[in-house]
Image (cartoon, rainbow, N blue to C red; front, side, top):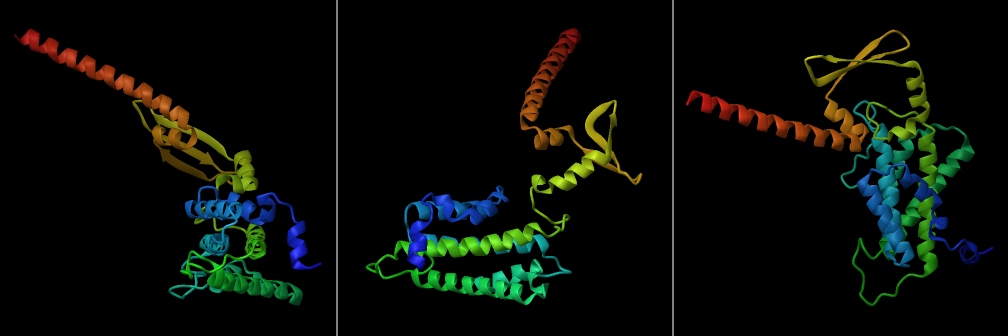
Length: 268
């Protein structure tokens, strides 16, 4: 079956063309640049716009950088050394960070190598056909739908390959920007075996002390302001507390003003 027939027989729903990209971007919902690039990618796909090629290349690059940042440190540097790394260099760095090059199986290494070729092809297509990054002749014909969708399929293949490898690796939790939900297994273990004791100064509640007792007997104290606790855990509760505290403060100020006036009258 030719590539043309394969493309014609694929589902028409936009997301069906890039399930790997969609799944990967959903893992980092709070990453502004990734989400902005993904939104531009989806809109370009819907509009049948050639900018989809630029967006596809950019998504691969952003995902590579995001993965590398999860593992890069001064002791284990993975960032490319070039001032302006190419897409191939970003892929190589991501593969190094994920330790995919350490797998000795020859067939797997051929698979890794094929993704390098796919990245180079995507980069070449973007350089020659992408209208955003490099200005083109105003009367140059647009690319065909097949060119655009081949770029989408190439980016989806590369991104899901990296993302699935990324999910199988233990993160450097001290530096990770992963969301809390991604660590569900560890969260359950901590919640099950860790005891929490709340203490505070009876005279003032401005700072609370949370004492976490670990299964090995170690105790970890955590000082936190009530406002910070509410702000990050329950925003509606924070708003309620803010409104209540504001009312009390206004009442205190009125009482203080009345007291001062009484003292002035008494003195007179």
